[in-house]
Amino acid sequence: MFTHTPLRLTTLAIIAAGSLAYAFAAGFYGLEILAEIAILAILVIALDLVAGFGGMVSLCHGALLGVGAYAFTVAANEAGLTALPAMILAVALTSALAFPIGAVCARSTGIYFIMATLAFGQMAYSFVFQSPLFGGDDGLSGAPRPDLSVVGIDLTDSRAFAVYAILLVALAYLVAAATLRSGLGRSLVGLHHNEKRLRALGLTVWRAKATAFAISGALAGLAGCLAAQHTQFISPGLLSWTVSGEALVVVILGGLGTLVGPLLGAILFVVLKHEISAITPYWHAIVGLILIAVVMSRAPGVFGFIEARWTARTRKPQGKEATADA
Image (cartoon, rainbow, N blue to C red; front, side, top):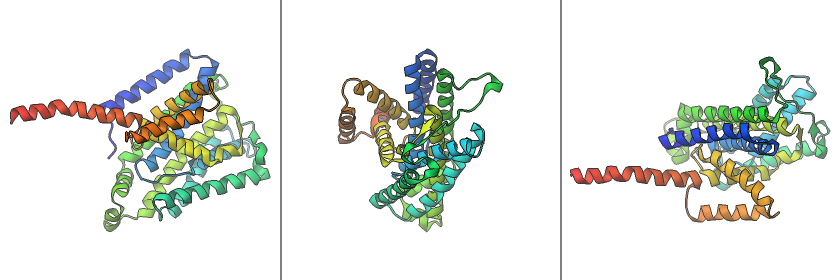
C-alpha cells in the first residue's frame, strides 16, 4: 500500500516550499518554466498512478492531455462557458473517455497494453488533426484563464498564474495519493503484483483497471486545461505519442511507482531541457544518455535511488543493535 514515509513527506515539503519561493522570486522567464514544470508534473502524476502502481504503461496520456485542452477551449469559446465550469466539463469528459480505453486495454498486458494505448492515442491525434471543428493543423487560440478577480487575483499576471499552477499540482497529488490509499488503490497494487490471485478472490479486474484509468485520465485532463490556459493556444501536437513518451521518460527518471519521484523528475527534466538547449540543440541526446545511465545502473529512478539508500542507512543501526542484543 502507498504510504508517506518521513523521506517522502520531507521531499514534498522541500519541493512545495522551493516552488512557492521561486514563484515569488523569479522573473518572467523563470515563471514560464515553473508553469511548464507544473503541467508536466500533473501529467506524470497521472501516468505514475496507472503505470507505476498498476503496471499499466500507457502511451495515450499525451492524447488524454490533449483531449482535456481541446475540451476546455471548445467549451469556453464555442459553448460560452466561463473557465471554471469549462475545466470541470473538460476533466469529466476526459475521465469518461479514459474509462472505456482502460476497460478495453485491461484485457491485455505488457507490450500489448502499450500498443493498444498507443493506437487509441494515435486515433485521437488523427481525429483532431483532420477535424475542422478543432482547427485542424492550425489549432485553436483564445483559451481563457479563470477569472478570480472577485478574490483580488489576476491570473493574467505570470506570478499569480505560477502559484495557481502549483496549487493544481498539489490538488492532483492529493487526488492520486487518496486513490492509492483507498480500496481501489490497494486492488490496483495487488493486480500489478499478482493479477491471477485477485481474480481468484472475485475482483472484477477490468472494472478496477478502467476506474483507475478514468481517475488518471481526469488528472491528465486537468493538465490539459492548465496547458491551454498557460499558452492560450492549443494544437494537435499536444496529442502526439511523443508527449506520452516524454512523460514516461520523466516517470522513469524520477522514480516509477513512488508518486513523489515523478515530481522530482519533472523538475529535473524541464530544467535540464532549458539549460542544455541553451548550449546545444541536441539536448534530447544528452537527456537520453542520462536516462540510459539511470536504467543501466538498475536504480529505480533518482528518488528511488535516494529512498533505497536512505532506507538501508536507517535500518542498518537497528540491525547492529539487534545483533548486539542477541
